[in-house]
Amino acid sequence: LVDEAEVEVFSVPSYACQRRTTLDNHNTVLTDALSLLAENAELEDEEGRGVAFRRAAAVLKALPKPVTSMTQLKGLPCLGEHSLRVIKDILDNGTSSEAEATKQSERYKALKVLTGIFGVGAKTAARWIRDGIHTLQQLRDSEHTLNRAQQAGLEHYEDVNQQVTKAEADAIGEIVEKAVLSVLPGAQVTLTGGFRRGKLTGHDVDFLITHPVEGREEGLMPKVVSWLESQGFLLYQKTTRNSYLESKEGPARPASNMDRFERCFSIFKLTKDDKHGTKQPEKLSENGIKAPEDTGRSLTHVQTDPNPPTPSCTMAQIHSSKDREHRSWRAVRVDLVVSPISQFAFALLGWTGSKLFERELRRWAGYEKAMSLSSHALYDNNQGRYLRATSEEEIFAHLATVKVASVQKPL
Ligand code: TTP
Ligand code: MN
Ligand code: MN
Ligand code: MN
Image (tube, rainbow, N blue to C red; front, side):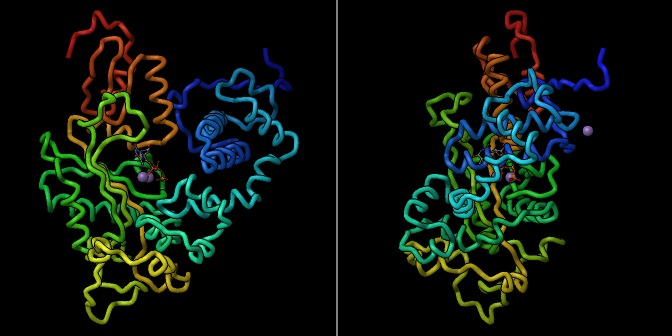
């Protein structure tokens, strides 16, 4: 049937969530270019274009062999005109001229540097660039007012942009667990995000917290945060309370992809010793040298100061690499989320990612199964009811169910 010269035509399912994810990518040149264009689209705040490139990259990543000719791609899903053009360019010329030009462009570089600041999104970065700001130094020298998150982001820029290792994630996990158990015995802490997917490094560490008795988790986050602050573990935190019950949209149809759990976006202070055990952090001054005496200027005071210093006083403190080598701590981005046990499986599924997997799973559930999936619940639009689940397996079992609503036993 197939002679040796004939090319293999690939086939993959339409939705990313239907594919087995491999670490064995045979098309890195193609996926790197498409991922860069996706990143650039996201930096330009063009979400739709970003998703299109992400989907295309994911399809190529799932192929069993390197692509050698365009004919192999016939019939593959998610490869739009633009992505095909990029692929053809690479097959013909070895590189994508568009990806290369983007990589070299001043705008891309500036967007990347500025959004690398925790608390700075595409819109803010674009506004600053319009004002002629392309670098951190230009930002520091400018008159721009930074909010509290951005000040912390600028101060800890180097650390926050350095990958977090699994060992560091585990060390932070021990600290979070200690904090949670101190304020609510019996509560459970689960590592989510990329590390739960088996990634060896990440941009942050994500945790989901619950308690086996429904309702006991209420009000937990402020207590956990207080405990962590009192121990000097937090360089920055912003807690948002649970808004699930007040939401008028209906739980399975959130207006955005954001969920409504009580959450805390934070920057942890991880001392080197904490990587090996549960040793408490030493009192350190800002340059990492042991403070000769307690000046009373604890991190807690800095954070809760009702009259924070003007940005120009605090934002210029990027330590040199040399200083950093001598410090005994580093800053790490940490996300904490609290879920009631009844929604835990949905929260776990939602917070494990990847972002594309979650997006595709929800799209697939909606179009192929007439079900609305969120990080809070699963709603069957045919049956007109919510489907309960206590594990991710049960959620997938619901989603895999053939739609014969009338013969299904109610829960
Ligand atoms: P991230 O921590 O952004 O990404 P990640 O852990 O997959 O990768 P990295 O190593 O770069 O950190 O998000 C983790 C998951 O959390 C992701 O699937 C999206 C989800 N999430 C929400 O559900 N709601 C939110 O508000 C946010 C910020 C993330
Ligand atoms: Mn292989
Ligand atoms: Mn993460
Ligand atoms: Mn995160």
